[in-house]
Amino acid sequence: MKILLISPRTPHTFWSFSHVMPFIAKKAAFPPLGLVTVAAMLPREWSLRLVDLNVESLSDSQIAWADYVFLTGMIIHEESVRNVVRRCKLKGKPVIGGGPLFTTGHERFSEVDHFVLGEAECLVDELVADLAKGTLKPQYFSAEKPDLTTTPVPRWDLLDMKQYARMSVQFSRGCPFNCDFCDIIVMYGRVPRSKPPAQLIDELEALKAAGWDGSVFIVDDNFIGNRVRAKELLRALIEWRARRRVKWTFLTEASLNLVDDPELLNLMVRAGFTSVFVGIESPEEDSLAECSKTQNRRRDLVEAVRTIQKAGLEVMGGFIVGFDNDKPGIFEQQLKFIREAGVVTAMVGLLTALPETRLFKRLKSEGRILAHSTGNNLDAVLNYVPTMNRQMLIDGYRRLVQQLYSPQEYYDRILVFLRNYKPSKPAVRLRWQEIRAFVRSMWVMGLVQRGRRQYWKFMVRALVAHPRAFSLAAQLAITGYHFRRIAGDL
Ligand code: SF4
Image (cartoon, rainbow, N blue to C red; front, side, top):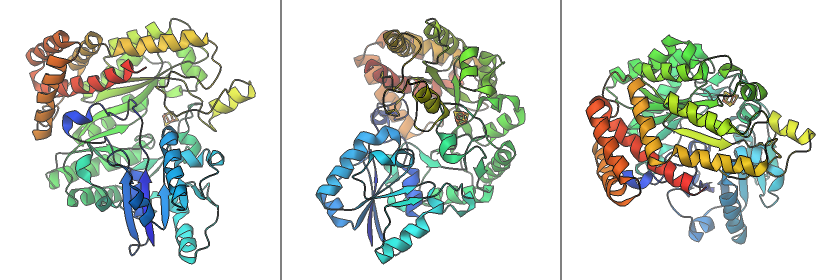
């Protein structure tokens, strides 16, 4: 059996980091983890090829080679997915679609021949048996939340790892919270499930054996959804890094209640975590109440961010505007908060109603849904009727993002962050990749692009005031270039 696995192209978003890639001579920020994991569930004797459209283009001969095409995607990938499906249909190749895009909206893809809806661990055995017999059903569905001990080590051999800035692994799925806009809990449930630490260490060993030596994104919905299990993993990671003399760093996503557990914070830093993405959403208490972001309510959010920074982690923050309780002053409130807290990587999006979420259901019952979400919270397009004047919301959002990523504002924010940040060692390992990125950034940001004067002034101030964190400052300056380009496109 010949299977072609295709990962669709990700458009420019905050998370694509696409404008950073040329600085570090990489093509994509993260690998298609779901696809290489599904690949590992298929019989070893089958021939597999993987095409990630973020690092290479898809040729007609690759499509012609396959007996079946496995296509995955998130909502944000819809355009690329439709394009791939069209090309496969022209070649008469059957497409099997799986992943979040299809799980929450397969009925909009009548051209796809077969669907795998739900978590792959529950469905792939049946799919494989039917593929072998030639009796494929139109749909394979399971609402079951599988035990992750059955998840195999991903097929890293199918990827050209050199093309990626980071590798990804997954420790847990699901999140105990209940934010109304979130589709994670719709798909993966509110009871966190995790792998035993030894299983994740085996995956890291496999990455190491495949030649990886760098940074790893632990792609969990909420890494601390089960704090006891997270601590067990962290202790195992600390031991593994010391025993194997590994200096890899980790990035993950976690809820803000991380700040309530100093032991957890300390273990994360000792295990090599350098950054954590936290959904802060809004400094407006009524908006937090509206979306049920209970874990962020009734606390000093600026102080919470500073506590995490002081422990030695950069806080990458997610923010939303467009809640019913947001008043016209929300844009200024968000800007002030992000400035004060020194959230350098502030990913601000317009609220979007994702399919099957509580938010979607509420807005639908109120007759306020206008269109399907594109899944791109950077789109200055609303798929619902807001309470604030629509144009005022879109204009305010654009202004906020553009202001946040204007050179002076951004560099000032890095300096605020560096004043709070207390790394126990030099913040970034300086390797050839970082040096090359730094030299290129001096050329692009220091000599060619707008904001040259601010760039040099910032570099000098960072070097004088924060020499131990200078390489991190330079890295953040490069990341800011990506965000500035993204903001410019709004
Ligand atoms: S904390 Fe994050 S993952 Fe959990 S429900 Fe809220 S938005 Fe979703």
